[in-house]
Image (cartoon, rainbow, N blue to C red):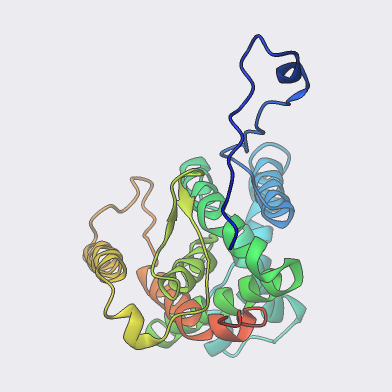
Length: 248
């Protein structure tokens, strides 16, 4: 039978202490490379639109790359932009505040998810949840002419995925974490923390549907896209997750 033996740490006066490196401090904002790239791309696109393009050119960008439901129901020709718009709209933003808020949430939820599922799966997850977001918006507003833009549909998908991990928080990094296996629906709806977050998130989107929190520039918040993205992330995350961990 053996017993563990702890060696006391050397004191400051001990010469051996000179050779002991200080413990590494992991930065709080340790963003995944793919998330940094997406943030940089969204910011670059917005800066080009705001400062380099004319108003007419920017209108052309919105017409081609934003998601406009009427394009698919009004008898218009289905060109390449019509096929790209259900994804490219997620890289455009209405104004600086819209961009900044989305990028903060992307950094918070995107990095831990990307670190878990990898770059390729993360990009596929972004595409699928972006499409799911506009799909629900399209079903409810098939003849709408207002362009839909913003990464919030994909980010809502990340929040939906976080629900399947019970909205765990890495207190050291102060952000969500995706640890362990994807939880079952029963586990999610038995978790107080998950139910609390789901309830708050749902209430916020219901209030948004009634116009609360709408921007002052005359635009509106596409709560339907938020719900579409969230549901896609919630139900599909298991398809994107890496091989589940084996229990010992």
